[in-house]
Length: 546
Image 1: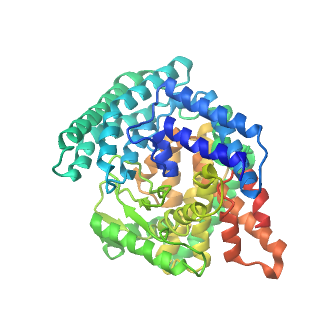
Image 2 (image 1 turned 120 degrees about the vertical axis):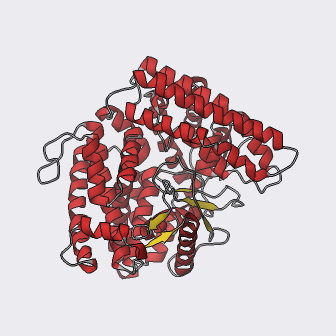
Image 3 (image 1 turned 30 degrees about the vertical axis):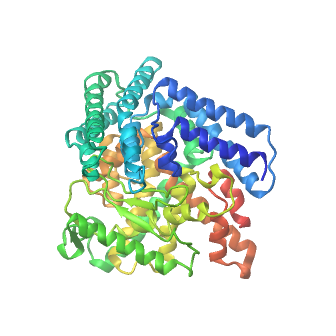
């Protein structure tokens, strides 16, 4: 490879230096052991400088071969879109319980490999930097108040509560308790105390000062939404077309849900069937650890079922570990990729929201989404193909979430939902993602609910959005509320799932039509995943030829 491979390699190292939290969470690259992201305006400026320097270098370089062609496309598109996000001022108003700096810093500690010889040294060094990171974040939010607009009050309250939960529950102290006795004991305890105090102070400041100047409006408007849409989707979204398509897709899925309900309880509504599935003790697992063990067993069984038959999954990527994140995390399950050297495996994380009883009807499809053939397989595939480094370790939200939703659809095609309960769970999660499209676009851009749907003719409100998720996905009220807060805090991300899946399905159809009788699904999957993460516009152009 040539200059673009060198640029991509340098970019990974430089990004790890200025944003080690995102580097570890997103790419599995640790960075300097004693570093932590500087979230202050100066830190944001340093991140921007890395992005701009990389963009300039890419513009002057010509690709040498296919990997560099794809790598230049991935990096060039993504960096341009990230620069637009920074230049619009979005880092100075990013208040999110799932994607914001407080959540990112805490989640980073989940990913430090404490089994390595220097693992606890890394923990101690990074704990000591948490107060400065939270103070830098506070200074960025203050800058955001000066330039306007501010984040919304609902998301501010949610993050304040999150930080307070981790502070008062002593999460950092519990985390370091696993060290036991040793020479780092006093240093770890002091670091944990300082980190917990920093989160508590941030919670108080958010609640008592920032909230007073936070926005009363939950939406961001068309202009800011378009900026977020570019970075999340890798596409310039036609909002009217996407909004109408989301409603059409939701209608299709509601019809299928009704048919599946007949197989479980003839004559019953979805709400009645959902109540049965949520309350029947024979359909639930009791206890957090038995629930985690069930998730792990299903993950392992699915990997064995698909390995060799549908996908080639090389060791050590045939392992995906299920974990339970602490209270205060968002409601949605999520995935964290393996480390760059593959020494630390990929993980799926399933929040419990304080529950001890876990219905399973809608979790089979989530395992497929988060593990295999979803996110874990996708990351596994790109880790072992000859892409340039930044591309091999990278991620595009619509590409990744679209693949994971396509993976659920694929498992339905392969007979992976063996009971009506599980298949209704699949259809409900599909409907949930279709509802996300219309809710996210609607709440942020002011589009109204069309005729024939609950709330027709009205602009979206908090209650209408929450009730739509309860109705379409069968979500519990706390889960639905957590989801809507998520949409408010990161515009366009919620649309990535269904709009991304649409591109994957269209690409497969086009490839099948092009190859005719010679079409081989396993080969197409391998070739398509080997493209690495791409924005939707580029992905749509590449998939038919895979």
